[in-house]
Length: 80
Length: 348
Image (tube, rainbow over all chains, first blue to last red; front, side, top):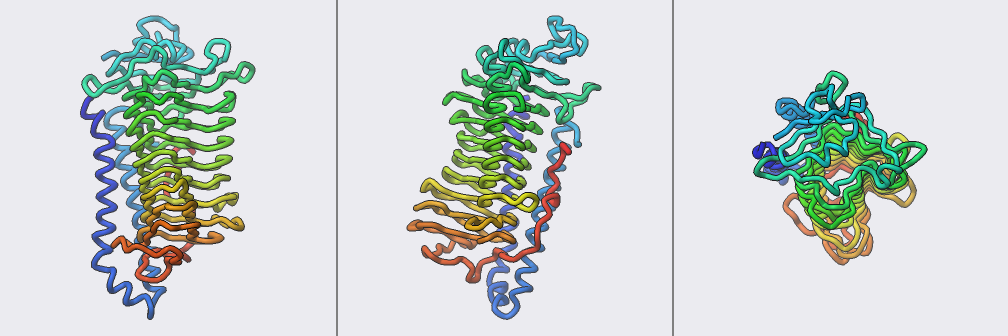
């Protein structure tokens, strides 16, 4: 019970921050080449950003489903 | 640790340890429970002002703790399975209390509410409210609904730290969906929609919004009036009815509003914006991977002697910088968002 009490927010927060860190880590090496591309091919850069933005939303949904499974496993809810 | 049951169709027989012997009034169990206890609840309890003027109360409520465990109130369906949207607290239409739940004593530490609907249709104020400056720490609301109140759906006023709202819905309230003035709150996968004023009036500090959906609130979708808020992978969209205000507004001269990987779209009323740095000394960081679309203005900064940044390397923009000069990996003409693309309509 105490573990449940403590870890819900910690685990979830860690998962979220992992997503954020992954975003930043992926971006870092791309920053210079994307900036270089911007002047000549801005639409390609924008398309890439849109794609990544969409991927984040899909990851959000995946994490949400993981969370549903977690709560179902501890007996306080079922996935709707 | 004791398990209790609450069902308005029960026999109201102590010790309320089966569905058949269920208490018929949640207040009975609120006054009984101790740390580590579990309450399974189903059906709809109607609260009249003659019995509870302000709504159910924490005057005799024991908090949970980190040793024995939280107190858990778990809404269930008719079969007794824990499921969202199956247990409702509501006011009596002919004898309206102030709220469904009225926390005045500050005894909400480590109370976990799962699957509970606070229906404010027949209350005179907020559907759920805390009014203390005391200890309402580490509360958790998961798959709870705060709806249809004549004021705010959930009014969590200057009370408690590390409150967590997970997969909650704030909708159809006359003013704000949520007004939280506590510290270190987490909002994960929540939905703030169709409220008469703000989706969330964030008078809290050090809070995080993750994977939330804001849509069609008449005020700002998210009004950040305090410091150090992270808004991560959220959608703020005004498509359906058209909001009359901004997507995100910061104000109050605060620092550290950070927006990352969000979609802020269709805030198309004249004079409004997707993101508005609203007052002097705001330090608002619009980091990368955001998509803006269909807003009257995407980014507006007002009276800005402070700083703001658009870049993951935290390069500081000069006041007046339009922020669109690369390297700036926000897209201001991205595709139109479909609000249902982020799947949070679990109660539909």
